[in-house]
Image 1 (cartoon, rainbow, N blue to C red):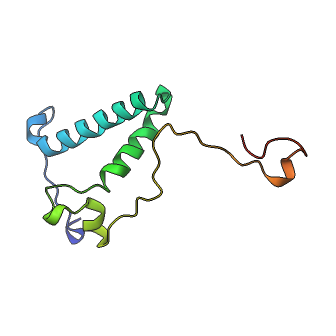
Image 2 (cartoon, rainbow, N blue to C red):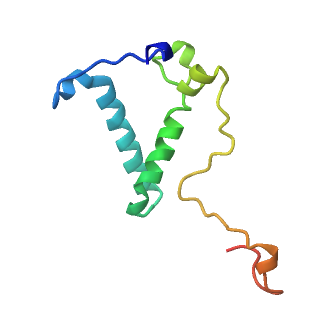
Length: 110
């Protein structure tokens, strides 16, 4: 792991105080997920997917800890993230029905 720049730092069991940065990051991710579920009227069983979306967005927003307010994505990849395709969670979406499955006067999407 050393050749990848990853440093292993062991911590005592059940001592969250030693893991302050990680604990805060996990708490922030959990709070964002909870707010997204409530604001978007998302069903509770979808929380793992919402958590992934929250972390995805979190990694693409600028943070003060990095130089010049860069995002973690930008720091890693060397280019700013593209976010034009992001939509509000809970938005109405339509699923296109394949042309071969359509009936003449039926809808094209559900």
